[in-house]
Image 1: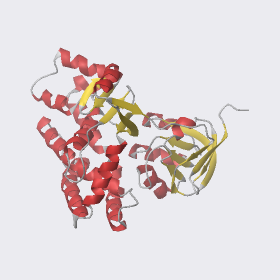
Image 2: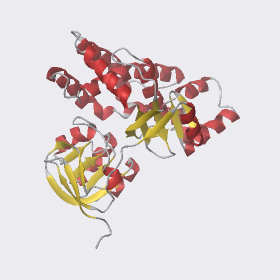
Image 3: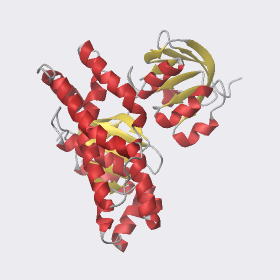
Image 4: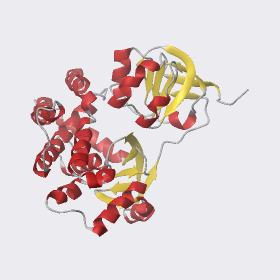
Length: 346
């Protein structure tokens, strides 16, 4: 049987609870697009989790969304659903409502889950050039207003769990929704606690089931899956999409997670897989931004335009080819990055 190839699609700095919401939505919710059959979320014991999709499934999903868009009022139906659930979630973001107990968390989780599907659909539509302009503009307006809150669902859960279950605070990044809900009337058993602690070394969420990192290879084989990443060639020029124009020469600073942001120095060029709202307070230091991921309306693209920072997104391989200290030229007029001098070269 031919194995199914899943390609690295993006990466995010979130906890397992967050990725379980993402996974469940993609597998079970088909109100506005297709459901998926194969997704892998892989964390190797670090801040960042890599998400792998079957690109054929992504293509079919996009085709289905475009087909449904031909139905009159479909975009307004998505927006209505999005806003209905967002209005509830936003009360927690604004601290008007608080997660006091497991019952509150369950309601928050279900709302978050229902919101996720319309959110993912809208955010995707804003980035697709073949979508009618009117629809893209409606989607982009919502994305620009709300993307800065993209971490809040995760943060609200983290704060609740650490406050409610201080004895398990060190496990906050590696517990699933079902495991947290089980704490309503009892503590974790010794066996369950041991299995959760194993995830601190790394974990994989494969088609909805969580495994410790040491079982990854076996479970991929059992599920007939293979994981791949975009290949980096040896070219001295990297290409991507222009988010904000400009021409900058400077030294690269690779940032692999938000914990590295304090290393940024004034005038350096930020090179990262992606950015998110946690990066914003540090971006006034950088002279340019280069990312592996994203389209012209991703977080890095939107923020770079607001802050007028030359930016190239969607290179796929910049973090593989560039090193901290490399002297590079970012031509955000043409969408190219050139390596002028390698770090350590005389």
